[in-house]
Image (cartoon, rainbow, N blue to C red; front, side, top):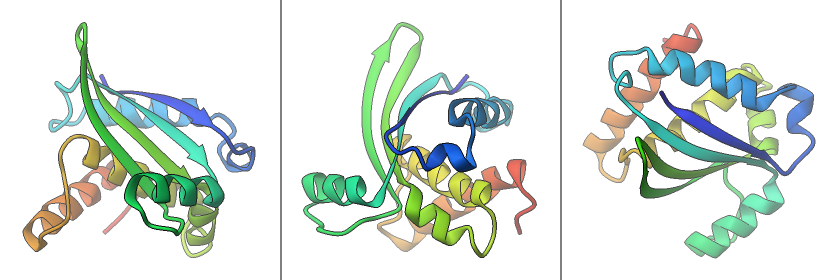
Length: 148
């Protein structure tokens, strides 16, 4: 089973996701039933925040003085039978803006999945890595949304 600890530092999130922890719990339950993730016993934390905090985090950890949609902080900590794989931070404003063309849950799912894949070792620095990660993201999104 995959578990997420949800921390919300921005009240705007609750306007669109009434109970973000329950939302992610349902998504992760579905994901845990798929063949690729069936045996995974991962835990991670997800910070639901805003552009200002994302800019601060991006500068502090990546020396980039701008906001971004998602940041991932991989770490491996074995605790009993669960592997803590790291932390993710997501900006409300960016997801909200993107959702004008689609919908909020789709855009939110895209970024937390992207962040989670970084936590478990996926990357997109090289073209072949990008293709592999993109294919995995699309595959996961199909479980939640009708995505081509």
